[in-house]
Length: 289
Image (tube, helix red, strand yellow):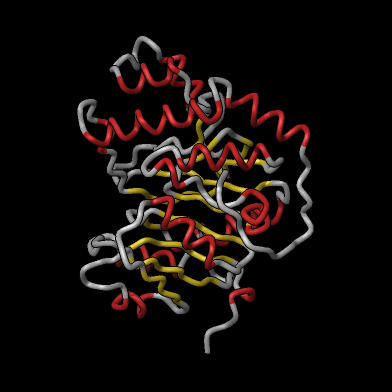
């Protein structure tokens, strides 16, 4: 018999469309990465051709959320947040995997429990070749965009170092502007307070926007360098003249229209003026403004 939603510590949100090669390593390592943690898999069937039912046997507790059409990343994450009932919700890309002996999920729960003002957190990310993914970042500036999109990284190396929190060791834990959307560990009470992701971005920047809104409401966004995960990152937007690159530019312009050129000031004002009530509460999650 499946326990009630509120009995779980973490709801693990995964979106399945057609990623058959990623699903087995993701689900098997995810299930073994939270000993003593009560976990449930919220698996979105994003109107897949094969159906997500075949993955039910890969995880002890599963709820399948079915779409009647293909939905965007933000829409699917919101579906997971709407269905969640656990203390924490982990929003994951499908192209992730873990090392069970690292106990990443258990360590993230411990981290969030010890930082009650943290509404959202990420951890270290590595690519399969061993390179570091720099998941903790400062809000983008025009200099950052130039360094990363126009091939000016060497000329603007100080800008990139600042953007990626180069003053910190990878194993540090610290408050940051935002963390990569491929792994978002969200406090349920913070999601209740802040609301759902802004679906108007359609692709890219929904994670940056959500992190900013967390801070606007007084919740910290934090990086936990004491644990890690692996990411088979597929960054199509790296190609300057690709469709994905233009989606990325359009999303950034949407972000600027919404928050202006000083998002850090918005975040800092929220952290200073708003102190979230950390008393657990259960209510519906509202749509993004």
